[in-house]
Image 1: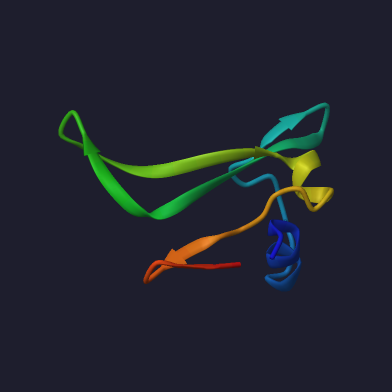
Image 2: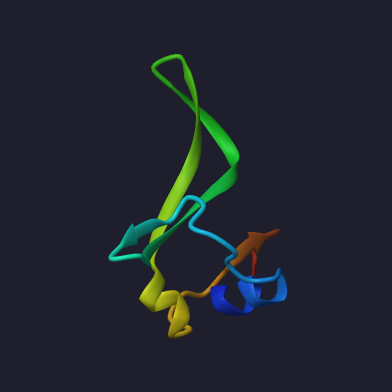
Length: 72
């Protein structure tokens, strides 16, 4: 399943949110995970940034691992 399909199912990207804007257009989409960790006694969340052009072109695939099975 591609990230674009997930975003479309959830209603799409409605604003800049945590993405980076260049020239008024979104260039990167930043996503944060539900897991967290401590770094230098500070609570942090896992983050990933992907180029929005790759999201629009269905080049970003969402894969989750559960019980040693890969699920897309």
